[in-house]
Image 1 (cartoon, rainbow, N blue to C red):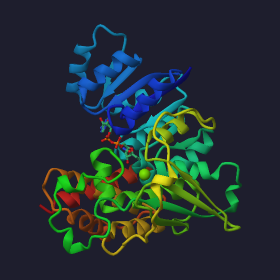
Image 2: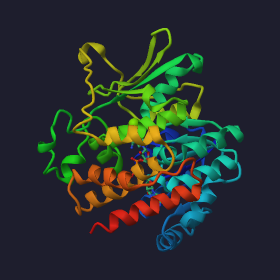
Image 3: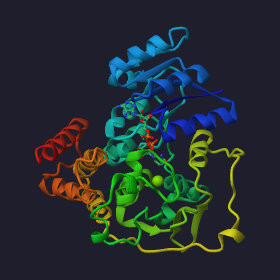
Length: 380
Ligand code: NAD
Ligand code: MG
């Protein structure tokens, strides 16, 4: 039995990871962690019998403890709880499906404890990739991408020499507002932005997909995962989300991974790498598909993507500012405190005001996050 732990077990990626576990039947879930969905956590504990469950708030942890007192699962809380789940005795793979850069410390501690990381939590690599990637090499652990594009790139790199890689073609659906111009985005409401054409995901990443900030985060994620410059990563809009990404080699050959949009494929690939397993579900039928479309991304309207290239090129604490500003601005938009276009305006303002620090320590990253939050909060 393979042993895993999941950070963010109640979310979109977390629940799909548990579906993969359920369908395969040969993975043991040793630990789970989530924010506050006690009801779902209780169900997960009763089905998967983890040794330990972490809940972010102390109060909610108390509630969960009371509900599951008839089980053997230990309940923990806060950052200490997350770290306990990340470093659990004999787990082999830590699935990081938590949202936001709060995942940095648990990921670092998981790596130090020798766990392979099945990484969905892109915000962690965007802000601390320069710490995480060398640390993983030092501890001889693998970082296995779960993000569908990065899984596609990883799959397309199998059997080829890394040094023959010329560029990465990162595909994007373009989101629900593809083709729209700024004046058409002025009155976008939360409900509009939460409608993704091809994927059902958590709220934050769905908003990020609509602004193309998600694609920007993914450009920086690709830089760290595959050791390329951000300018070797070209974003290609492929509205049907059938080509999940491509790799171009020095001889001009392009390798791609295609499939119906289903996150269970990249999740399962990361959990069983390098093996492939049967996965039930729809297959591509090229006759009914007929054609695939390609477009250039509109970086003038969706200039969050341009800001991400800037941040990725300069490095240092700037990607943290890009990411932290986006995390808080998206939260404010979801709370209906700001307008849609303000999300990227806020990111730009914070990046312009920031004095970049090269090669930041974890503390400097967290300080840059806090300073970004202070700046945004003082706007009001
Ligand atoms: P989600 O909002 O559906 O789930 C987030 C999970 O994190 C939940 O279980 C929540 O309880 C947990 N969480 C949040 N804050 C926490 C805290 N402080 N302590 C403990 N747990 C906490 O998000 P998602 O869509 O599943 O995305 C998760 C990550 O995966 C994100 O980084 C996202 O960018 C990435 N990702 C998601 C998808 C997708 O299809 N959903 C695809 C690619 C990448
Ligand atoms: Mg993705």
